[in-house]
Amino acid sequence: MRYTGSKNKLARREGIDLSLKTPGSKAQSSLLRRLNITPGQHGASRKRKITDYGAQLREKQKLKRVYGISETQMKNYFAKANKTEGNTGELLIQALERRLDNSVYRLKFAPTRASARQLVNHGHVTVNSKKVSIASYQIVKGDVIEFRRGKTAKIPYIQEILEKKDTMPSVWLNKKGTVGKVAEYPTLNDFTEEIELQSVIEFYSR
Image (cartoon, rainbow, N blue to C red; front, side):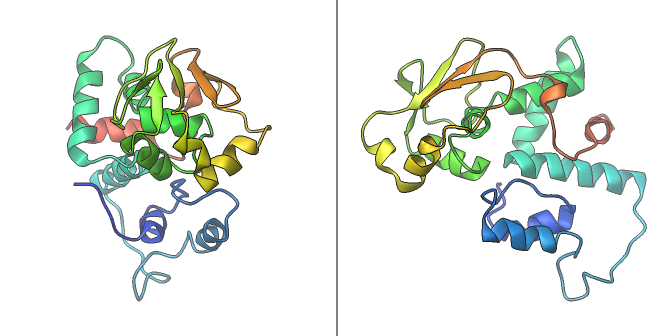
């Protein structure tokens, strides 16, 4: 089940910016000022000794919450990565990064992954000129991602985003105007989140 509560509490619990707020917004600025304050009445003074398991759990929760996915989805991504030949951590990140909602976010077509997911779920995004409304859809090298013509371009915040000419996508993606293309598959070098990936792997390998 996907978490639907306070995004601020989530970020403060994990102690990092989970990219859940629009960059540069007042909401994000307010969150960043309070990141080190644990949610709850006594959050500011509460300290607990964390076990190895607890540390692994926290990193796993961070990763899951950054991408906005359920525990079942995370387990499935890990299981597939673990069974495939190659670096398990890189394969896991590659699968998460190749989600269509994340790709829309990485192309800077949406300010947050949550808003990118909403755009996909509501049918505003096409892949190779075909509407795809599944946020977990796995894009592949060569795929062309763009907004559906017509109503989508009239959404106020979409207009604002598309008018920004200096927004660069992640290095594994190319963008020209409102059209994005998957140039390469993402690697661990493209993973910039403040998460100990090895701890996540150890958690699911128990």
